[in-house]
Length: 403
Image 1 (tube, rainbow, N blue to C red):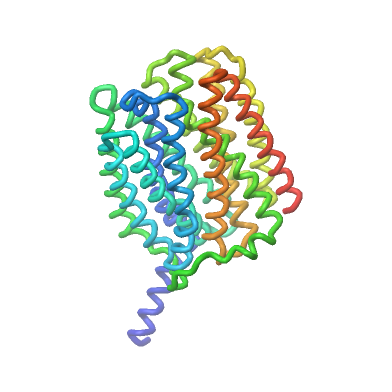
Image 2 (cartoon, one colour; image 1 turned 120 degrees about the vertical axis):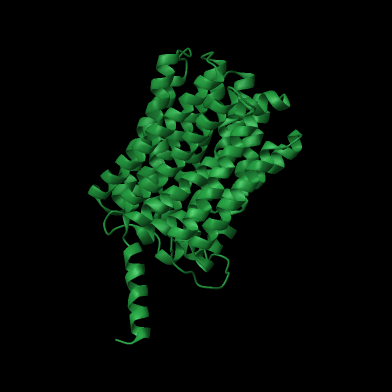
């Protein structure tokens, strides 16, 4: 065998080891965890932002909106970069940018600069879903895409839960900004590890704006994107006000509130793994849509329990833990369903569209939730979220019929 032939064989063998490899799935999931660890610090730090800048509840919601706005407007450029240059390069640059932006947030001297820094953090996070979803579709073993996507999505809840523990835990004995610095160092370190361990798949080599005309004609995809708006509105309202609700209504400390938020992320991780495994058993896009519909339907009832609950700690913890299993646990099968109803070459653009819908819901709902809390109370806010989740469930029912 010639040296050239041996080289080609070695390359093919190396690529085949990563294609359909749980090792590659784990590497991508680790990247997602590090990226989410950075971004979700802003949700864990809502109480600290309120105290440091003397903010009302609605202005805290604007901080979260700034992060989502930066995230949302950058999604299609990120999706185009992923399809054009491959996911690996985008993921490395994205994680480094997240670490830098996180440090910038911690040093913001005014509310206006805080909003700008948080928006840049969101823009850096826009690489997450298009790149990691493309990586998972290429890395998942045959017939296990739903489970692999669920495992990757555990990175979101794991990162979010860890950030709440790190930020609130360190703030108990040091400045809250120190937690941001620790997380930035962790993200930078994993960027180096990821660059060494992950091969990825190449892109087209030319930067092109995503072609979405074909996606507009895909009825199942359109219904799924519409459902994503209401899923995002529900998730981000819950994320944005869990800590404040536990502090203001339950009258618990910031540390206890951070633990409650972390618990929702732990159970969210369990929900994503379980939902992915069940969807694989049911099979295809229809199986994923069926599982997501069931999770969201249960979440509707759980949100309704928070209306008029009185703020007891035990009931509050139980409801939020169960919401982790359901509403937070549904995004893995949401993305695997989305990836199943479009062509492989369109995954970056399709993911950008789905994530844009989720983020748009997150842009609109948290400020509205905050206004309701200030003018009426938390019961009105949770009633709004109940209705939003119900609308999402109805759209998922339509997706299930179309698949």
